[in-house]
Length: 413
Image 1 (cartoon, one colour):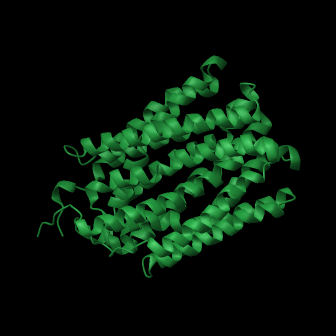
Image 2: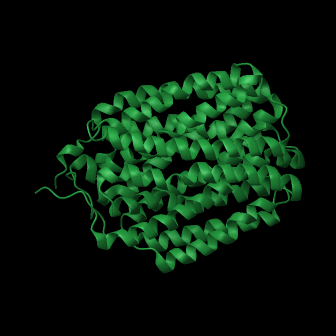
Image 3: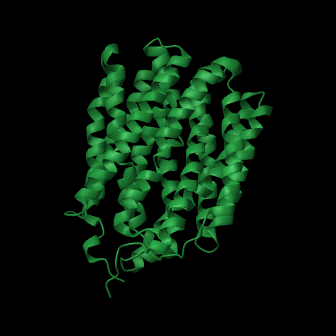
């Protein structure tokens, strides 16, 4: 029997309200995450830390994130996701408040690690919850809106870390996230809704889509996941070091570097995410492979811009970085929608947790530290140049994976 791919009017209000609250949590999450690179030179100066040590802070966050992800994914497929989201948001907010007691590099390291525990909840459950509100063809559009939190949050984090950190100390901007996080968690407890699992799934729940064992041999899921992992290696490394790169190479002050990167990220992020989601939505009307192919072109167009940023003349650094960020953000909604669409509701939270484990383990958990280590032994230009290799690998995987995209034209249960 063929099912309609439209949400009923009764579902629209709770779906929109839940999307708004989850978007707010994700926004605060990314503000907190990008305060560190925005204020990095200030922190580094206070604790006399090496580049390798500063990169290790991001590693600490994502190690705990990865360790918790399989457990939270398992819980999300078996229990109500709402109390799990609230608990994670509260834990993350309290860990952020604990920045007040950070007086050494190693206490900051532990603080960053604890934040990863909280993040391994709503980051996993939100895409699964939203997928249950919307059918396959609409998930690209909805997730493009949800992931606007990445560029906007990153931009605010960069600016807060650089500007507020320079004025009132680098600990101050972290407090901007903690209290709002507790408020949004309370609002989600009051207004958020738990949709019926699989209520808007229309693709058949085959073995490779509906079982944990099947996920591990599902080529649509695996190629989207590892294509994103290689992309995340580059994005995580670049985002952690680009304000410091502008400070050292372009001679900008810490405050100006954070502001430039923040402004660039919010403009590029909003424009790139919306344009990418729009193009993919149009392309999906005629090509089921559109989510993968648009992601491929997003990464392919980033490569020449990245070369100009890291190895081109100084006058081309900022405009090339602006172009590179725009192209990178084109794939945000499409690639995450491809991952969600590749599996069915019974294992969706587990699949998202496996995806997050892979993209961080093979991606940004170690890339900032690797870049820092290369920088300590040569230069930051060469360290950041390592990310170009991962972008090439991402292109190859995404192009190869397009042929495994599920046929949305045959939406049947």
